[in-house]
Length: 181
Image 1 (cartoon, rainbow, N blue to C red):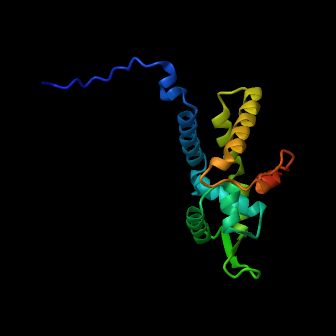
Image 2 (image 1 turned 60 degrees about the vertical axis):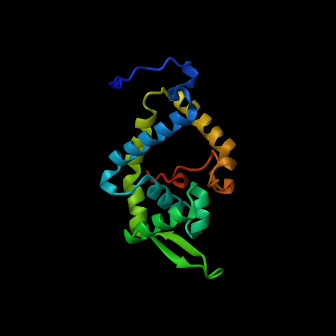
Image 3 (image 1 turned 45 degrees about the horizontal axis):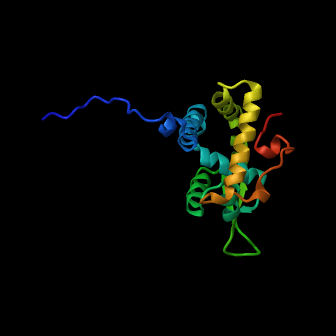
């Protein structure tokens, strides 16, 4: 007996479809955001997490790896590998802390700061492409809702972000990693 191979939609309540589940949609949007980032920033040869790390190190020079992990929401093992790659590219340097010899403090190099300045337009295009289907009011509302959800569920994360390292709404463009001007 032959198996039926055509795929027919199941007669499920629409609420059961993945396309209506926020977790699935957020994961899909994150996949798309990474793809857009990689397209727009290809010439710079950095991943989104590498960009987040170098941007945070630039804002917080002398931050240790653990605090960096807590600042951008990645586990220590991942951050260690990211910093290895950024250091190999000459974008950050590690220095042993004088206060705690086990801690490695991170500093951006001149090349790292240059990369951040040069990549700025590309990262702006990434944000514009992601938000393009929404009008300006919707974009603002969407970002407010995303921030509210992220902050509300931060404690549920495998790697909660240190709230003390989250910039306030009134942070200058340069403190957010912006390098224009």
